[in-house]
Length: 220
Image (cartoon, rainbow, N blue to C red):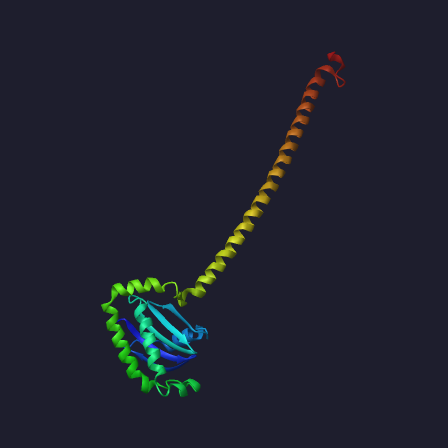
């Protein structure tokens, strides 16, 4: 199993979708992905849990497929190109494009969507070498973004920067405090040395005064 779920949407309105398993692409995840897709034509790949979400946005219509992360990108984007051709060839597409509503083309497009998913799921297994070569050529054009970690990673980076700045300020304050402590200790030691000298001189004087008198005249 390679292609798991696919949908076609106009803006955030899903007009057709199909899943080959009981595990559907959750509505909340659909809205999250579709709301992040820019209005201009683009094609990108997102990471969602253990799967890859590939999409092509063309003329305000989004063609999206959820696939295993082992299938690469050539097959999903080939599938999306074929899906776009099928959708645009549908006679009701123009009306739905002008007035999109939920599952507006579900009954008409789901059988074709199912057939395409089965076809490209089988093709994905047969062409691993060509797939690998094409993936290498496409890597410059496709951005892989991990939706689950973008916000968390940004928050961790901000916290890390804040902590780094805080540590730098603390280190600066510590160095400044250390210099102040050194100056205080130097003055304290200087005062102790001066006081010691005065005490020694005073003791020497008292000692001499006992034998020579207060004026030290008898010792001449």
